[in-house]
Image 1 (tube, rainbow, N blue to C red):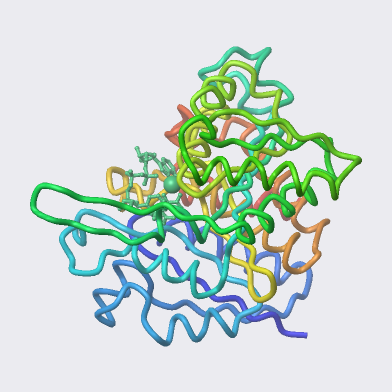
Image 2 (image 1 turned 90 degrees about the horizontal axis):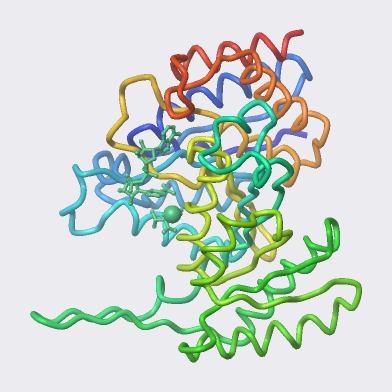
Length: 347
Ligand code: NAD
Ligand code: IPM
Ligand code: MN
């Protein structure tokens, strides 16, 4: 049966890495005779430019109707003063689709272990997942601005916490059965409720262990002993910050994919990084974050484990052969890396 995939290239390097990924998808579709209907729609700054809105109506309708969504990245200085910023489109899309569970895997391909800024013995074997709550917390609370005062309200309901903690345990069950819940329960009311709720939900998963870490200390442990983590679950803002920090372990944001899931309905797959205006348009962005997001889509939305693995292995092999983009100290361009992956997929 045809799978409907919506592609939202977005802005900056989003367009370049989406281009790469669609080339890889085209190759896979031919090789495996897959029936994917992939349609691109304007989103983010491109949505503002083309339709006057970062999340145009027809883009949202197409997303709701899709089997899965691939998103590049949005934002850039051009729209920083726009009445509605590209980022608002992204938050609105996550909310409209109920994408509460953002899965950000952290591992270090063997081929680039020596490139990590951290000590090799601490990096080899790192394999954990950040489960970031994505539709609640300070991102979505009431915002107020007066001339000399501003506030952002952070709210979590028990039900919102329960479902994300449950998701973390469900994932832990398929792995090393350890959940680390990260909060700021020594200060924040939302974190106190978070911690109590995590304890309650843990009773449903007696085969797993739960530990709590305060976010400031967790930020340190992540660099010092990243192998301590299996599944790290946390609220929206902490998850945003900690997952960018986690990208330092493999050595580049350009290798970091993610998946966002709702209770039911299409999932969305996107790199964790942004539109990288500093390198946009130069054919130097690392497309792996987007290619690996597509691999996550094949695995998690379509159950295509073998194909997902094939893509991941092809990327690893290409890197092992020394084809590296600039963020990893190499000289390969975005297209050159992409062509090398396609060549590897043909072997
Ligand atoms: P960024 O993630 O775009 O870039 C941070 C740094 O990482 C930059 O030096 C960039 O060159 C580098 N980088 C990121 N992706 C890379 C890749 N694939 N290959 C090589 N290098 C890469 O963060 P920023 O510069 O703070 O934000 C730029 C814009 O992106 C802002 O408008 C921000 O709001 C937006 N943003 C969007 C998303 C998203 O679309 N999901 C995520 C984060 C930030
Ligand atoms: C991310 C981004 C977004 C976030 C921004 C662009 C709204 O940083 O996906 O990590 O903070 O969630
Ligand atoms: Mn972020």
